[in-house]
Image 1 (spheres, one colour):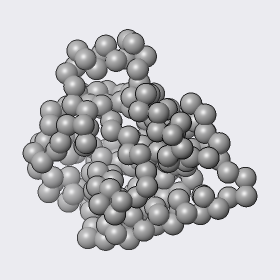
Image 2 (cartoon, helix red, strand yellow):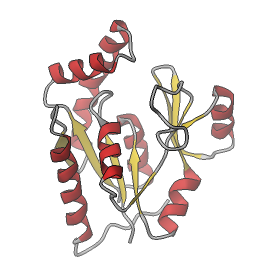
Image 3 (cartoon, one colour):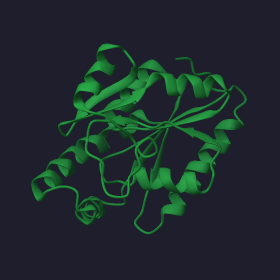
Length: 195
């Protein structure tokens, strides 16, 4: 049975960095590409990092029930296209979703048998440093994201695993995720996800 693995955590914790490293190491996953209405950042590739769509197109996707889950986060839409997840699972491939904490709660209701991994920073100070170094948010936006992160950290109890993503130790976090997946594949009673 293919696994549905959900990686979540606060903004700035390094979800994208973990995902990129897993891709570089050729993890045998279908990495679901999230749709977003936010502008493309330097170095990002449409269809690889995100599906960058207009607000109008995203709202049509909501109306047409094309999304497994979606949210408006910091004024921008993000959502998971249903078709991509179902096709990958139907082909027998494990599927990896990278989503925010609210999105993970929605997926938990839809697919409680998924594997939920919470990516956490080593400290609030480290999270502040990461958000500042990104240089994609204003100081006010950084404060808003840090306040939200503190609320999101309280949701860790709803996850199966927590992985600390320490600065400059990305491979350690990725190795822990690999170990979780290997262990999940050895379960006597495998998880059976239906969507």
